[in-house]
Image (tube, rainbow, N blue to C red; front, top):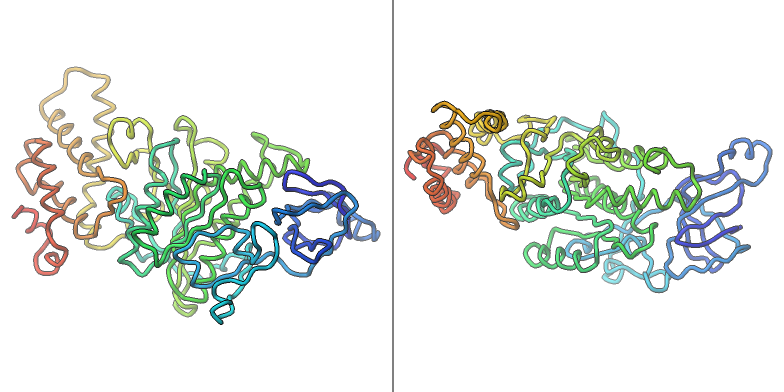
Length: 476
């Protein structure tokens, strides 16, 4: 029985045998809410057969449940519709559940109208066990040179995109998605808390170039907290379904989990849950851990599919020790950090090599790229140390000045336009320029290096099959 209703949440009293995630039906028999918490003394009430307090998120946009209305509990968990027609479209968590956003009534999906009944998958399914997984060793080519060379990503990895506001975090995710056009990898982009106009521009730019393998799951900033809470879980469930059923590789971008945590904090405060650090509830770590742990690389006996996750976290003033940031860092397998200072100085993507970490390393990097970028990492890290030392001293020796000029040129090679992912041969040629293949690198002439990089990108990809990369770089 409903005791209070408002702001997308409701409080009710019921039998203590209810469980979290249970779907509640309204008086008209429609799915109206999902149970998120039971009373603190549910175990005691269960033993005595007494009623306990329940908290639920309202799903239907048109639900009007006054105090005293009766809800009927079902024996099923929340699930979504999964079918191949979702790729190339933009969906909301409500439409994935088979509900219309306007009326809350059941709506047949495009797959059902075509005669192919869709499948259902639990929104919060358990993560694959360890025995069902295998080591992350297959590379995922993102097309972003700084990631593929310095912080490579493998299929089944959880790569955190961490950085200040307006530093290009979403752009890195979109470039990685666009680059999968030539790879056998499907993509799911989950948007949480973005403006509807921003999401419209993102979806139009991506679907106009790669409409066949990208699915969008969105919950804008104007949607109620329940939809924003369910958006990342719905995207993860969609990817997990095709990993198991289709035995394919999926890339999931969650943009962003900072807004998702703030949404869950709003829900918890509305439900009068006890606040913890920064007013977040105590289970905020479990909120993201059970979401990100579903990324995995299945064994060959189970099909060999994978789910690679790119969660996005927004830092405040380059503070990587914030509450939500440290939680996500401890869950994921590495994080490229995007610096606002580098972004404003024109180094884009603004990845700070000193603060970026990759726990997978070169184990999931293509062998040819590993051989070219091995010394590149060392030289860029050495340049960062020399640059911090040069700020404290005005009298530098000739060798130090040459190292600084060369390091600056190495960093300039990493510059890349947004929406223009690089092919693997292009990345190989650009990194080969850093190994002293041309006189411009030795002399520190930035203009000639940029021209050499442009000429390298104009070389067709089939040339790498017939000539070594270093020989092509020397010819250029």
